Length: 304
Length: 304
Image (tube, rainbow over all chains, first blue to last red; front, side, top):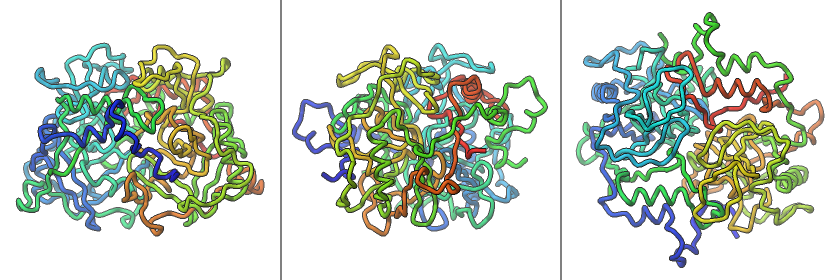
């Protein structure tokens, strides 16, 4: 028996065992086009690193509209071209920005965006709960985004959240993209961004603006050498990975635009998928019976 | 203001604000020797990669005694020397073993260890609860190890766990080290090991034997190029990182032994530390009020 291939692989026997629940893979395999929503070209960033590797980022204007508009303007002005990855902290974040911190921002950038750390939950939102408790009253998915729900709090220390409340916020799952900021009330302009490359640092939720997520190519950032300075900052220019360009897909020639689709989260298919993620079979002998919002691994694919 | 330095750094103003609660860093700074326990040389593995980089692993004989004894025997027989990292799957695991899968195991290896996936919780255990619900009734720390608690379950799908019950098991936090296995009832011999390099895959808890954790040097594994084959396996020999040797610290000359200490988890200091991790101040404007067991970031240091 090849142990390497067996560890966590889908058991072949499942094919002949119709009584077993479907695996997450089988559910994805059986989706139809209506189970997916496209990512609009104006919500898709194409980041090209110095060596030509690409990273694709979906923006989240429903959650951080001013920050997202800043990021779009920076991309349209080609402001990101020539900046660099400045920080890689193991089990935490990769961060990119202007190493000199002196590059002038283009015209039209909102220098002090509002604190888009949480928002009122829309009454018509189709919130699919996944996880109870922990860092929020509950956490789940809205329109393909991982979201926490809770009440407004201001105390320190924070009280436990007792109701779902009226607030919603993006949560810091692996691959989410946020806007670096200084001390409060600075919320960051969007010129310095980071992504999560470790266990979800959910203590950052509602403390900093999340503005998107990586949909493909995160391995080109997560496998970079860790910085040796405090907080994983690189200490020399040689260590930094240059960023050749960041473009909005909507600015690329139509024929060159990449197209991605996110599994819809307001469907029966998604509920089955979450249930299958919580109750793995085959190789697994004790299904967990639950799944963390950041372990859902929402399917995202190139458009068919 | 240098934004790069400010993002998540400890605010200098805290020093002059005694009314604020202590930060996690300040609590660690104020520890005394009695807040730490040493790692015994017989529970410490020193892995040296082909390029000389080192990774240090603490073994967990209280949770997986037969698997740990196998791993010790493999190390003493120098069996690991010359094997390789065979798999790097982003946001999941790094796995190392014998790429040929034909290397004979040394004498004395238990070929079919028991399923050391959970154990009876000791009545005298000093369990420090951290997280409620989710993948266990609750999760916390015992003697410096991240542990889930719950009742015995066998059903599929699993029912929610309603009491802490009598069982305890190591949980799959970032950096934990487990024993690759094939299909049940195979539990793996210890000749193939993996470590977590992403969001805690807690659906693996109680499905596979955890036998330790990395205490230093994980960045030498987590920053390796991701494998391009299915499940992140490397497809060619050239992609693999060779492992020069894995030694028990107890087999090294006394003068060459590394010495590590783990923060004790049965102390008031640890409870303060967890509370501080749950209620961050300074740069943070909304403390979470809770902390996930895998976000505790238990302090581990070189012995003073």
